[in-house]
Length: 421
Length: 118
Image 1 (tube, one colour):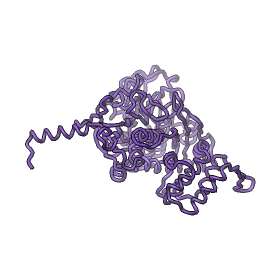
Image 2: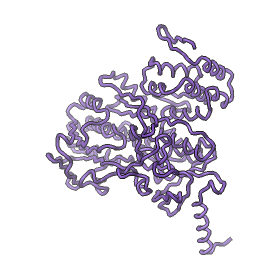
Image 3: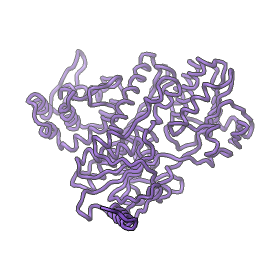
Image 4: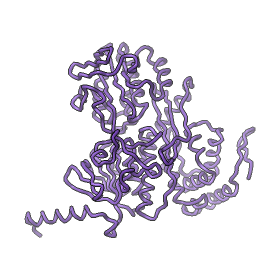
């Protein structure tokens, strides 16, 4: 059979038309499009495909072939894990669970037509969408800093080449040099993450560059697991780390990546390495689709993780306004299971069960010295509300801290298997 | 209702004797998966509940730092969960998880994980 250009063009148009037609109406399997293949999106895709047992077609849109987890990327910075160990591919989702993994960018959504447009030019129709785009940066929270500064002053808050760059910069620091972090304002991904990062950088510097100093500029007046980190830094890194909240040195006035100068109202710093973590909002597709509020995050219905703005969209992970839950990979994973259950209930005859949410965040202060904070949550009318919580205590024995660290290693293996199959 | 003593001086009040006995029999007679889960309630609910465990525990037999919970005997699983709920076992993650599970939900989970290969 020969295709003339005209015939080929007609065929392509017809195919695109079929792809854009909602499936329930045509009698075929209902179709769910998941936008974003991180801890939330990949979990949602896997659980919808697994639990519907072939009854729902799942398409996962994720630009990267290998996903590097933000959680445990600090352990790579600290030299305690190799880079490959935090990378995960989507082969099992495709081959074992039948998820149609499409490596592409979602560039827009039409909520009324129920379609997702891709950078490749394709448009995919859905019966339900799960949107899990993670975070993007509010560069305006850091005057002078922008996407063009990120190679000189890495954010390393989306794991991958940025994390590798920051590690290389730390290792190349001049002897006795200054490492600086500009910590993010609330709300942001992984509340204890910046301070675990400081711990891991201190661990490397203590070995390779013991006269080096670390300064944290913080727009916040307190931070997650503060007592535990402050105690641990005093014990393990002595006078290396200085935490300077805005009440000590004034608000941030400007950052100049060319001159490596950080200016606050009362001080000027000239670090050799500077990790700038800007304020955050939901990933851009959420805003483009009209799913985010004026604060940049997405309101959800707590019992189902359904968008408050569109009934055919569910949202999970860091992009959501999840009440008392922190933005973490664990939270995203647990929210995704609630969303997957609710999506299945809306498309098939499966049941809608009460939402169950939990989170634990482990952090490493020094090798073998792990701490954790966690909680369980329930869906109320207004928000995802905390039910019960716990946190490691100061003064715990080294044996307990070692056990907590080993638990975190087990958790990493468990959750990445749960996310990526 | 029954009182079960795990070790000297440590007694756990067990309020679920009927369901518990049924679950033990399920494990002993190696019922098909759907029947075993149904003892503790809705099988689909058991599977949904298990998702919470899977955020940390693996089912393929692997597990350093956090044990695999696949293929545990139903009685052992139920005992351990009740010990966490009674704060006899110390891990705070498991204490908060177990506190939110009813007796029947624990049995559902035990039956579900009991059917998985170690």
